[in-house]
Length: 133
Picture 1 (cartoon, helix red, strand yellow):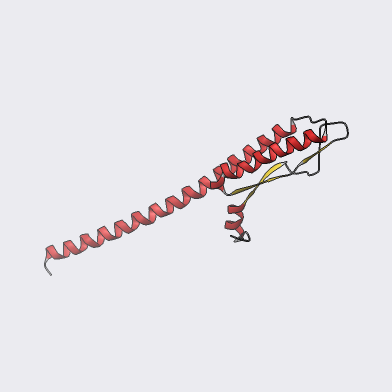
Picture 2 (picture 1 turned 180 degrees about the vertical axis):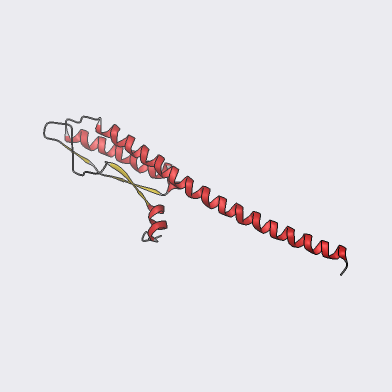
């Protein structure tokens, strides 16, 4: 082969290797951005759930009817967090509050009233899956 042919072959190989490097770098960057975005969105969902819980605790029901109305309203709002932050795979859970003897709330659980479960994080850490998925 002549010198010109070797130059063309070498240039073609260099372009091919360079393209492969660019593709690999772009893929690694996209995976890193996706993982970081998941954590940021999940944390935002947690903050929203905590704000909802604080707002719920500020209510002062006097009757069982008021308790049921408030629990239903805030339970629906908690469920909507799962829709709003669906990309974070946060699964919301609502625990109803109970009426205390003198009015106000008596919580039956020590966990926040609206709390989230990080389904994606569990799957990535433990390799678990949800039944039916």
